[in-house]
Amino acid sequence: MDLPRRYVRLFPLVAALAVLVLTAACGTGDGKAAAEGQTLTLWHYERPESAMGIAWAEAIKQFQASHPGVTVKFEQKTFEQLRQNAAIALNADDPPTLLEYNKGNSTAGVLAKEGLLTDLTAEAGKRGWDTMLSPSLQTTTRYDSTGIMGSGAMYGIPNYAEFVMVYYNKDLFTKYGVAVPATLAEFEKAMLTFVKAGITPLSVSGAEYPAQQIFYELVLAKADRAFVKAFELYDGKVDFAGPEFRFGATTFASWVRKGYIAKDAARVKAEDMNLAFVNKHFPMVIVGSWMFGDFARTIKDFRWGTFLFPGNTLHPGSSGNLWVVPAKAKNKSLAYDFIDITMKPEIQRLLGESGGVPVRPDASAVTDAHNRELIGHYSTIEAADGLAFYPDWPAPGYYDVLGVAIQDLINGLKAPDDVLADIAKPYNENLVRLGR
Image (cartoon, rainbow, N blue to C red; front, top):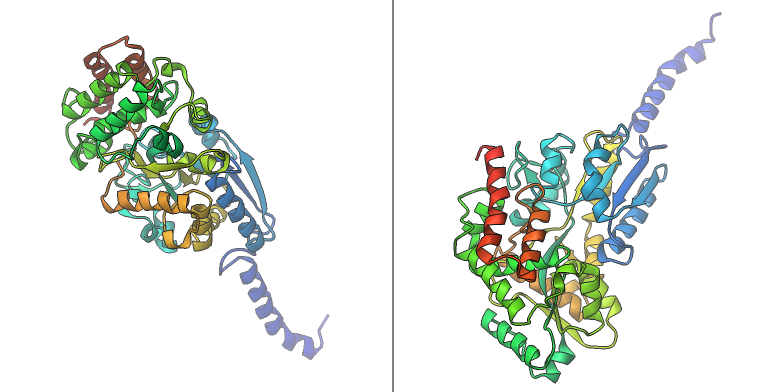
């Protein structure tokens, strides 16, 4: 049937409008229209009351506001769940869109090498994430074809930093006339004062990660950047019988003998270690900035503060854990949008105000004195290129190797030289596997 002329003349206009509508629906701008009906599945293991948990909850709210047609499915995980099962989850046909994962050769590096993570290099350049992260923070975002961090493509994006420091009970320091130490010798003198008063100075967990980080602090007391690059990045030769490791092992063992570390610390878990400090059983605990927010919330009946490990320029620390996008993930643009929100100044400021360490720190924007002190410590470390990563990173399974080795030192089951031989063997075997 022939159509009236006026309808025929309208066809080009209607067709043009249809193209415009379809183009808008396909998201030529930010892709929000195309995201209608899609789902962002997000996994992380930060507690809701932590600085990251608080900041990321706000990021979810902002994401929902800017993506009204998208369903956000958040699943709370534990660190151990992801540490043990990430490869299985990412190999599944329907993995999460985005998840928090631990950084380092033995974790994110392994997943990157196995092709389980999305290369974020181009997206980082497009959105400016690469310029927001300092070179030292980018070390843990980049992995080469063998899974070694420090070079290659970006496989994860952190929006916070972290480092290990000393938390102390100011009231106990005042009571026993102990000043905040500036050198390792002063630190040991302070601990001896507490021992003479019948008080074990350090709350320590040997059943989990904290004890090996104290050991690494002592190693770093004799180390330089070249040592860190050799040990962590395989850029040079590591001598486990050399002055750095020998000092760490022998000094740690002596701290146990002198009563600076309790002889039953080998069976103490990290949570119990931290609780013992909160309950005033110990004047000090050496642990990461990830505990800062918890201490700020729970310590109510004594004055407390923090200081960097005395005398060290290098400290265990790095970027925070990474936002990674599984290679098999659907709706990857949603993951990129969410990461972008976590890097916004207001989310970074909320991180700092909640006791976290933003990757874009601005101490002047933080009102709480404790939080300003925390960000000040990080600025000191960053200015000195002092982030030295963590001792369990270099080789797969090294966390457990170090855990057993440090327990042997605490329990006096092995001499320092034997412990160093124990940790050298799997490290060097890993080098052989990598052909280095």
